[in-house]
Image 1 (cartoon, one colour):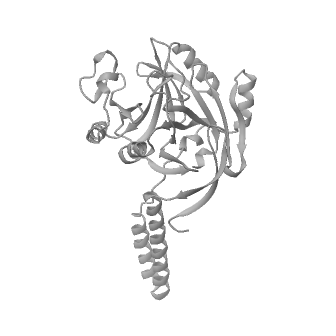
Image 2 (cartoon, rainbow, N blue to C red):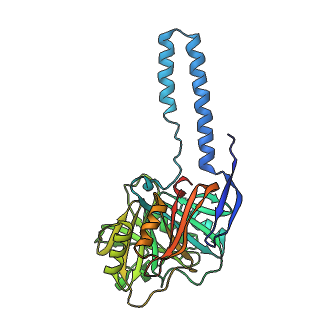
Image 3 (cartoon, rainbow, N blue to C red):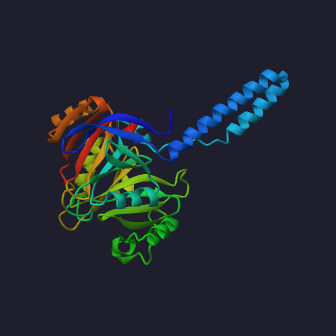
Length: 338
């Protein structure tokens, strides 16, 4: 396989249209894998040649030294939905409506460090346990004022990343968004969670929270979805019952956990709008045995905006519905292979 491998996939968008597109698998991570594989093959050939020409004990010494050398060849692991292995329902993706795809790619890929991949013609920013789909489309507004106030990521060094984002012109809105005027700078220490955090605005007014975790083995990972609602107990109970999320607390916030994501619930003093049509159009969960799960939801009274559909050529199943609080949700089975 060369550095570029084109594979045909069936692309399905939220309007129900399907088309056979071409996906190019390319990028620095892939090139590194190819180079590492070539280096590995050449090294093994060298060992075989040396073993046939030298006495056995010298060949064994050479093999040992080569194995040590090969251990230093780091083959990067591509970000993926690894949490999908941990339970029947896990974090999947966020689907954004964006007015400027290149500006969004600059934010999610170049500044935050996501990996650029494609799903059909749709660019996707790939993070550990979260895919960010970027669809060119006019929006009716940002995330603030909707049932999903913001999305959150953990990073190794919040202060360094905020400095980088600020230099790139990204609005840092920590002082505005931390309740009670408690934040006096761009980075805020939260005692209840014993960490540093910051709020920034991605293009199209998508609010993003960055939380520090110095023990991460990756620069950035998905962390939470922060809902806004006038009924915190009801929303928390609904997500716990519907998705088997484990209820609990995150600091002072009501919360529930699914593999790959914390669902956080905060009280909104005013009514919130639904997400469909906004810059964060919908959230997505990856579900094992999706067809059976959809039947279970229908039996419980859930009305689907788009019922279960299996797209054979893409080996992907999807369904859409809206939660009782206005959040548009896509359920998928197969996106963990992207």
